[in-house]
Amino acid sequence: MRQFNDVVAAIPSRPSFRQLRRFAWTVAALLPFVLFFLIAASPHALADAGVVLNESLDENVDRLTSTGHSAIYLSRVCSDSPVKLRLCRPGEQGSILSNYINIGEDQPYEWNAVPLSVYLYGVENPVNRPLFASYRIKRLLEDRYRQKYLTDYCTTESCRNSPKSEWREMVAATMIRGVYIFEVDTTVEQDLEFIAEFNDSLNKNHFNGVTRNCADFTMRVINTYFPHATKADYLNDFGMTSPKAVARTFTRYALHHPESHLRVMHFAQMPGTTKRSRTVRSGTEQLFHSGKLLVPMVLVSYYSVPVVTVSYFTTGRFNAQKEFEQHPADELLPIASSENPLQQTVGSDAQWKQLRKSLNALRAQNSDGANRNPERFFKQLDANGSPFLADDGSVWIDLSNDQKTARLGLSASNILAPDSNSSSAYELLLARASHLLKGPKRNRETMPEFLQDWGALQRVYAINLTVSPGNLGADRSRIETSSTSSAEH
Image (cartoon, rainbow, N blue to C red; front, side, top):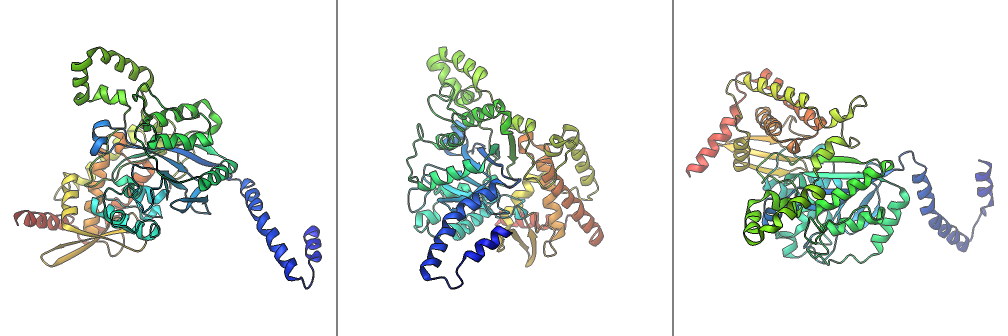
């Protein structure tokens, strides 16, 4: 305090303009260093850098190759704009950096940065995450993102409206694919160096599917933080860098450096009417599993089959779901347990089995046995509803039939809202739980996420019993009747 008083006393009572200007320049010059030391001294000085592994889309070339997509997650680096980076402010969750063949903006940028929650769910606050996926809802979220973040970067007709503009894949990615993030610790120094380097570098697209693809971009960024941490697997990927090879080599690097604290996050694809994504594969793995490729190869060069098989089994095997189960991250989850974090995050087989039994018991209590086929309900909901967004990005849908309307909240924050029809909410949550519990492990949410939705299902079931005990399936009948009428016309 005495030193501070001495400094204050040294300031002239009536400083000149030159003195004030010099003082302002001094403060401005020292401010970044002060900020740096404050962050470095924080008990939460460690942050994360991670390799994002997106599952394969069942479309275009990806349908044949099953390579998926690769990107970068940085928990302390946020987007000042889609093409400029900064340190995150309190409450922000970091960003995803990604590049594509054609991002589609007015200038040919190599990469864009998107807030993590926007990338995963299309909204800034995960509380507003959608519970139902459709292409119409995703398009609404894409347009909201464009209007809010891309007004200076996306003014041409092709950027605004073309489905080939790949900035769209960076909005609500979990509507179309499952996402894994393999993350390790970083320091403030590493993040500041990365921000300075990328903000000063030329952000111009030179995408090349063989030598400068999305996996090459991820490898370059991660190796900026950790030299030689990620590598290409030219043997299994036939001379190219694949997303799976980058994730696999980064995981091995982290396991050989225990101080980096490897964690894996998993965000399952949302239930709904969008095409289901597929497991990511390397080149030899795809040949080994795909008859469409293996049979022609056998006919043309049968002697190469043993080589492909040995290469895959000896160097190319990697299972993202198993890595998640062995090294689950829980820092972004709303529920955590120090007693058994693996079971709390991933869920044990016994826990999932008990939930399936509870679901069957809940459905047995429903007089009309609603939602025996959840996929059918999803299609009917999508075909006969009109979705729209609230200002915060939460999703609503209007259902109408015979001049009667029902409004349903489709986000975690509004599905139990007073304006959301409780009977339709019950039907949706029941169909959603059925879809998640009957699928393979990689299609499941984390246990804390599922338990949140399960609690909502139990609450809305109790509400319906209180308000209308014998009418739990009324809105389902309305949706199905509307669907039948539409088909007839």
